[in-house]
Structure formats: structure tokens, C-alpha cells
Image (cartoon, rainbow over all chains, first blue to last red; front, side, top):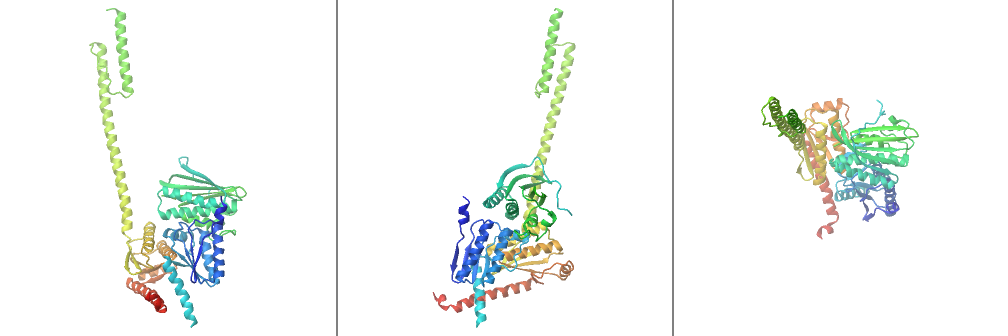
Amino acid sequence: MNTDLYEKKIPIIKIGNFLIVSIQVDMHDKLAIQLQSQILEEIGKTSAKGVLIDISVLEMVDSFIGRMLSGMATMASIMDAAVVIVGMQPAVAITLVELGLEMPGVDTALNMEKGMEMLEKRVRNEDNDLF
Amino acid sequence: MSLVMLELTSEKNWEKLGKHILKFENDVVKLRQTIRHYAKQFRMGIVDQTRVTTAVSELFRNMYNYAGGGEVVIEKGIIEGKEALIITCIDSGPGIEDLELAMSDGYSTGMGMGYGLPGAKRLVDRFEIESKVNEGTIVRIMKWR
Amino acid sequence: MSKTQNNEKLEIRIDHIEDTLASVAAGDMDARINSEIEDDLSGIEAAIDLLIDDLTDELKQREKMQKEVEEKLSKIQEQQKTIVQQQEDLLELSSPVSKVWDNVLILPVIGTLDSQRTQIMMENLLEKIVETGCTIAILDITGVPTVDTQVANHLLKTVTSARLLGAECIISGISPAIAQTIVHLGIDLSSVKTKSTLQDAMIFAMKQNIRSENIKLQTLFDNPNENEE
């Protein structure tokens, strides 16, 4: 009964230069680690420039998932992809801060649209640097 | 200041709401959802519900990673004149050698990031811990309504 | 009348007295002896009846008083509930969050900040940010007389939580006195955008808005075909 949960994969969608991941399930630690490597592999495969991670339905982010998310942001940036965490619930944000995880260096956006704008702006800035 | 409580707060008139066994990784997810359910029934606000759920998630992780599981008891009672939700996590794992160190921010024996116990403590109204090396650990958290 | 007959009658009467007393003791306050014969015993019987009467009265009075006290108690409890409710309402009322411009929210904070109030204030602000989708929130503390370590920490927590949602918080209305205390207390506000007046904060917010608008315009210019569709 437990096995099907391990096999359940969170879908990663590619749109243009970006990857979109929507976390819809309450993750246990193994699933979180699995998701992290899955996204990084996808970045490597598609050479995506940005990743949007929608966590608007997550009712809880504890220190493990928090660390997974901020770790992934750092790892992705080494692979030249920007990560934006989208749609965190107020209660989750307050709890994370009280837990001691302020997640510095992680970009956040209120919704998908704003997250997309952020990533586009970043890619544009890089392009402008070229010319 | 010593963080070691010689005796955990306990009253006979606490009402037992449930007792659960944590054994598999999936139990962590199921149990924290159970706790949220109780917190909701207890008419806690959404932020307090999230605080309790997150705190127990940290405790469950410790139980699963270090002791291979354990037992979770959920109670409600009146403490210092306030209605409280009381959650007790009992394991018979290796125990914690230096409680004061384990309760300090940023300390970790490798698997976590050191926010587990001190973080959980910050999220609840009262946090009590008792541990004996090679015997086990009991953590009791309380959250007022 | 024979002596034995007399004795029997007396015994019956005494039994009756005992029965009456027993039923009174059991709670039946309507039981009386009501003897119709006039002799030495009838005086005692009458006295017992009188005593029962008195007892009944007293009991009734006590019950009435108890009821009154209980009523008063429940009334007081009710009032207390109202007071708590009103306090909560007041807490919420005292931290109104309003949208003042595209993308800009303002939360004017007036009066002393304690941790319960800051908690509610913070929750309100964060919820409003999500609800309106505004990415800039100005926390104006002009009306806050003093800032101590606890209040400063609460403000910092609010700013950090808002950042996790994807919004930027600006704290405005920092008086010279508050600036002095903050530095004296060793509180690090360097990660927070601070402005001395609400006006400055508004100007800053507008500039931020224009900056993001420019990006949108730029996008349009880059893809003119997209616009024609």
C-alpha cells in the first residue's frame, strides 16, 4: 500500500524556457528528495532558464521541505536556472519564519503570473547584458 | 537554565483523544494530517493549526529517523486555566545524550538541519522533553486554544 | 377505654409522627401531622408541624436565592464573553489594511504594540496581500510611541513572512527617537526597507510600480505582433 505513494511522481511541465511544478500532495521526506532530483534532472535535460514551484495548496512546510526548496534554489542557480516559489499561504510563511527558516536568497511570488513576470525579467536582463 | 524536566506535566483529568503508532514514513504524513484535524476540531485559528502541524512534523521526523518510529498520544485538558491540546511522542530509540545541545539552534547530528527540536519548541506554548540514553525519548507539546 | 387500647392509639399516633418526619427528611415538604385529637401529645404534634412550615419557607427562600445567584453568574459570564469578543473585534478594527493604489497596501499602526495585537495585525496584512495580489505593503508606524526589542522583532517577522509570500514591506514613519532606540537596542533592520515618512514610502512604492510597468511595456514593444492579435 505504501509502494504506490513512492511511485507517485509530481508532474513537471515545460513551457517555453521555464519549468512549472505544482505540488498538490502532502509530501513526506523521501518524496521531497525525489522531487528535488527530478527537477534538477529536468533542468539538465531541457536547459530551462527558470523553475516555478507552486505551493499554494500546501498547508504545511516544515524544516525539511523548507530546506529542500531553498537547497533546490541554490542548486538550480548553479545550473543557471532561477527558482521562484509561488503562492505560499500566509500561515505557512509565519510558521516558517518562527521555525527559523527565513529562506534568504529564495525568490518568491504571490501567484503564477507574477512569478512568470519575474523569470521573464531575469532572462531579459541577461539578454540585455549581451548587447 | 536546564531544559531537562524531571517530570512531565500531567493531569488525570485530561481527556484522551487518540493514540497512534508511527512506523512507516507514510505514517508521518497521515499522522500530521490527523493532528491538524484535531487542531481544527479544537477550533484553533489557521495559523495555530499550521504551527501545531509543523511542530509535530518535526517531532515525527526525529522519531522516524532516529528511533525507527514510536507512539503518539493526543489529549486535551486544562493547563493554567487554559484549554490545551496536548500531544505526546514516545519512542524507545537511542535517546539524546546532551539535551541542551539538541535544543540549541543549528545543532544537528546530520540528518536534519538542526531546526527540528528548537523550531518545534518555538511553535508551541509549552514544550517538555525527557530522554535517557539507550532507553528512549518522550516529548510533550502543548498548545493553548 | 382500656389502657391497652389507649396505648395502641398512642403508638399509631407516634408512628404517624415518625412517618411524617421521615417523609419531610426525604424531601416531601407537604407532609404534615394534622392531628385532630386534643390532648398532651397534640401540642408536640402542632409544634412539629410549625417547625416543618418554617423549614419549608426557609428552604424555598434558599432555593430562590440560589437561582438568583446562578442567574447573576451566568449574566456575568455572558458579559465577560462579550468583553472578550469586543476586545478581539477592537484588535481587528485597530489594524485596518487598505489598498491605496495599484499594487500598494497601507497598514497604519496606531498605539502600543503588544504581541497579541501584532500577531493579528500580521495575519490581517498577509491575508490581504494574498487577497489583493498587491506586492508592496507599507507599514506606517508614525502612531507608535515606542519600539522595544519585542515589537521590532514582530515587525521583522511580518516583513520576512511577507517576503516569503512574494511581497515587499516598507516600514515608514520612523521618528528620530525610534531610530535612536532601535540602534541602541542593537536591532538589525538593515534587511528592511525603511522610510522616514509615509510620503517617502508612497513615492518609493510608485517608483517600484513604474519600474515593473516599464518591463511590461518593454515586453509589448519587443513583440509587436503579439499586441495586434
